[in-house]
Amino acid sequence: MKLTQEEVITYLRRNGLEENPQHQALNIAEEAGEVARAVLKRVQGIRGSYEHWTEEIRTEAADVLISLMCLAEIEGWDLGDAVDERWNVVINRELDKHRHEAS
View 1 (cartoon, rainbow, N blue to C red):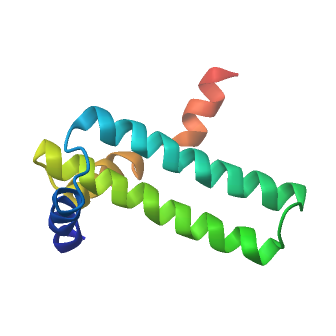
View 2 (spheres, helix red, strand yellow):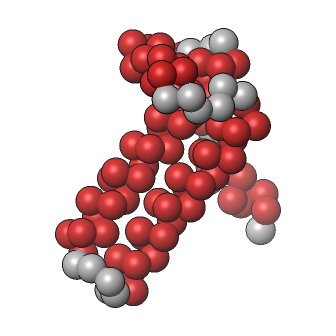
């Protein structure tokens, strides 16, 4: 993923796109909205087949990740490392314990 992360900034520069965190944060939100739209349309069964919307979900999820890589590169950190670090926290959560405490 690091090689791709380094490439995304080249893509931004080559195409005259904004290299600022604010723009990337908004772009991430836009792309995530497109994932949500595709999931909704698939559930509703409208404007396309189940297979069409499944492919759209896949495509838009990849766009979210690409936008996150842009943000990470602009901010100067590795998204893969951040995911690994965060996963180590998440995987060790005891969800059942927290569910019982909230009841």
